[in-house]
Structures are given as C-alpha cells and as structure tokens.
Image (tube, rainbow, N blue to C red; front, side, top):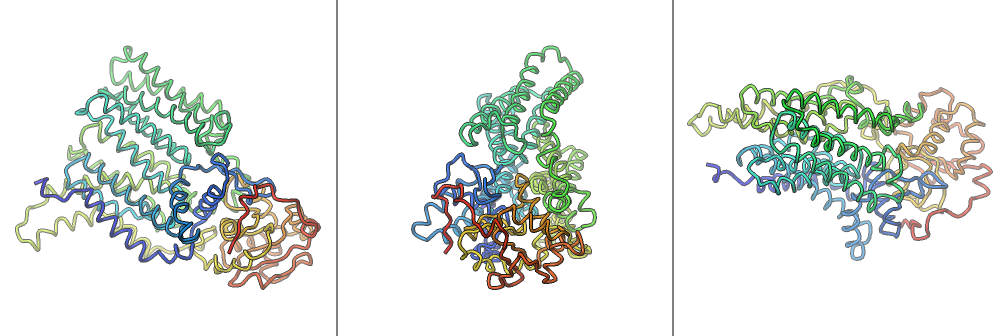
Length: 618
C-alpha cells in the first residue's frame, strides 16, 4: 500500500508550486515596487554595501546613527544568497531588477526547503501517507508560511529552516537502526546547524538548548546512544562557534561580551555546556538509575546555568533588558513581534493566530500518548521538547510562534493519520471522504484562527504596526527627498529603513536596539513640550531636515505624550521659526522641513564611510 502513496517529496514540490504561485499572484506588486518591511530594507542595504566594497567583517551601517555609524548585530550569512543573485544579475538587468529577482528567488528557495524538510521529518515518523499529511498541515501554519512570502529576506525564515534541520539531525542521531558512525555524523551536523543559526540571530539559542535537553532527558531515561550523541553535539557546537567567531564575525568578537551576537559570551556558554557533558561521561558509572541520572544531571545543569548567570547577569534578561525606559514605552512595547501573550490578551485574533496551532499540537501529543501511538522516546521526546521550548519562548516573544508552528505540524499530522486509520471504512466513494474531511477540519488551526480574526473586535492601535495605516505614500513619496544633495535627516523611526534604502542620506534613527542615541534624540525631539529644547536637540544632532508621516501610528504615539509638544504643533501646522516647511519635498501625508540651526547652516565634515559606499540613487 505504501508504494501506491505519492512520494512526500513530490507532494512537497506540488505544495510549493501552489503556495508560492499564490504568493506571487497576490504579492508580486509589493516586490515590483520594492514595498517591503523594515528589516528587509536594511538587509538589502547591508547586501548593497557588501557588493559595493564593504568588508566581509564590517557590519557597520555608516549612514545610520551619524557621525560614527551603527555596528549592526546582524550576520553576513543571510546576505550570501542575496548577494549571489544580485551580483550575478545586476550587470545584465541593473541593480533594481536584480534585487526584485533576488527577492523572489531567495524567498522561493527558502519556502521549498521548508516543505522538503517538513516532508522528510514526516517520513521519519511514519509511512508516506504521514509525510504527505505533514506537508498538508504545513500549509495550515499561516504564522510560519507568512515568513516566506516574496520579499521576506531578513533572517527568520532561514532560521526556521535551520531549526527544522536541527530537529531532523537530532532524530537521525538517535536512530537505533543506524550504525554508530552515521549517528555521530548526524549529531555533528545538528551541532553545526544549530550554532550557525545562532550566529544569524540569538533567538535561535532556545533551539540549541532544546537539542541539549532532548539528549539529556534521553540519557536520564537510559536510552542507548544519547550520552554519546549529546557529547558530539556539544563538541560540534563549540567548534563551530569558534570557527564562526573567526571567519564570520567582526574581529574581536571572541573576546567581546555582547549579549545580542554570537560573541565570546556565548562561546563560553557553549563551552560550559560541553564541560557538563564531559562531567556526565566521567560520572556515568555512579548513576545507577534514571532517578539518579535525572537528579545528578539536573543538578549539574543548574550549577552551569547559575555560573553563567553569575558571570554575565546582563545577558540573562536578553538584549533588551537595559533599554532606556522612554524607548521601551514609545518603541519596544509597541513592536508587535516583540510582544508576549499578556500583550495579546486584548487581541483575540492575534492570540489565536500565534498560539492555536501549538495548543492543538500539545492536545495531539496527549491523545497519541493515550492511544499508545506516540512512538519510541528517541522520536517523540525530541519533537515534544522542541515544540515545548519554542512555545514557551513565544509566550514572551510572539515572533517565536512561527517556530512553534513549524514543529506543531508533526504531532497534529500524526494524530490525523491515526484517526484516519481508525475511521470507519465506508464503501461508497462519495461518502468515503467524509471521515477524512471531518478529521482535517477538527485538527485544522484555521478553523479557530479565521473565525476569530473575522469576528473579534479590533482595539485601537497604539503601536508601530504599519498595516493599520496608509503609510503616506511610501516609498514613492520619498522620490523628491532622494534627489536632494546628501543630508542628515531627523525623522520617524519607522521610516528610517526606507530612507536608508531609497535615499543616499544619513539617518538619525531606525528601529534597532543598538541605535539608542538616535532613537532617544528622535523621540525626545517629537515629544518635547519646550521649543527651545527641541531646537537644541535638532542642532546637536546636526540634522538638515525633519521628516515625518502624518498617518503612521508613530505620529499618534508622540502626539499622545502632550497636547502642546512638537508633534502636536506640527500636526496642527504650527511651525517653529527654525523649521522651514518644504512642501515640494513631501506629499501624500509625508511632511518635510528644512532645519535652520547653526549646525545645519555651517555644514559638516566629510562622512566617515569609504568612498566606495557612496550611494547613488537614480
């Protein structure tokens, strides 16, 4: 019967064609207009700078946070596929057209990898029919799928793929029917992939911790090969971290104590975990039972965590722990993807979209255990741990819900497969599909998220979510601004990435936590109730122009801080004497003002960035 089933990899290809075709049909207009999200713009700016001669190790955005520029906490790895496509095509097509091709090709390849990995992991848990079901249920995970639309070229989609790769390698490294050398290679691959994902963004650290926890729990349960696989995984992660620090990261990263990049801080953490596995090897003769292994391993893990917390307490709360209170109130607390479950309680639609699928998956795991169809611990436990860790992280950072949904596919498909096998065998062809349709509807997260999204009331937005506004004609409204001689712009945080991409200008602020000074200056300027203080801020920043968008939520956010602050006055067209309206540079709700301060009038020294990075905008 299995041979009569369609090959899941072929099904994955068909699903990709249908899904990506629909994405292109409905969303290619955004690609053609280069109408992207903030991080996608800055990713392209980083790629352009690299293609224009910026060093592999130099991740500074020299036009952001002038005069020194901003050292980004990003990685070069996601730049590579984009740079290859754009670099290969721009000689023939021009840079803009080559960029449009890259936005489609790279996102499309990532989506194909998502379906292929999903099908392959599904095959690991059962026959072809289960692999096909996993591909089908992957289509229902819209929170994950939306990370793969054309134009999404930041890094979350790549990390989702790598996380699935880690899970697959962990499962293969524990396969009892494989020879020991193959299991070692899979554990080695899991460590390499997990650490590479960490080097792209530290939000992947929980995935690495999930892999360690899976190996550790299986060792505690006495499963053969778990201790060896966990040790190989730990060695691979430390070695890869050292290699990344030398080959991919800026010089000095190995000795740095940054909490937002794969610096020496996290190399030390990985080495500490590796030492823990070494201790388990040495002490394993003393652990005679599962209870002793759980107690001993848990104690050692707690001691390692406590030591790390004592050495770098600033990193325990994450990279945003020391964000200025004003920035937290006016920026970070209003970024949708950085919100947690408590922030979404007033948004049932967002709550359901983020958490319905993982909760259905947990229910599926319980049902499978009750039916005694959960499978061997070497398979069920890692899947459960990866899902649980991703879900717990998503409770504080909703963006991790896309990872949780990617893992939720498998237990839901496993339960659907089991229920279909137990469904009554009806003979009439027309009636035979009813049990299958009922099971798919019962376990389909869209049955919860779509009605919730349609019926739930929408509270007034306080945040910085552009999807709720008209966006003042961006990016087309920036054409006149882009044609100006190079200048420095004090503008809305949420427009910063577009200014960097579409214009050659220096930009004071963009929504990145390392941009503290620029963000504070911008926000203090717009919420200032003292005109002299606002003028002083503009003067000290060296801004040539002030720019904002009337219909972005950011304007309402600043105006709400005081009835007579700068933002409120400008919205009422009450212009200070030191600001000169420039209506010829705006339009569609975009407001631009020339700054008549001492610094702006005198001009500034030459820019600190290399001449090769001078942007020319047609």
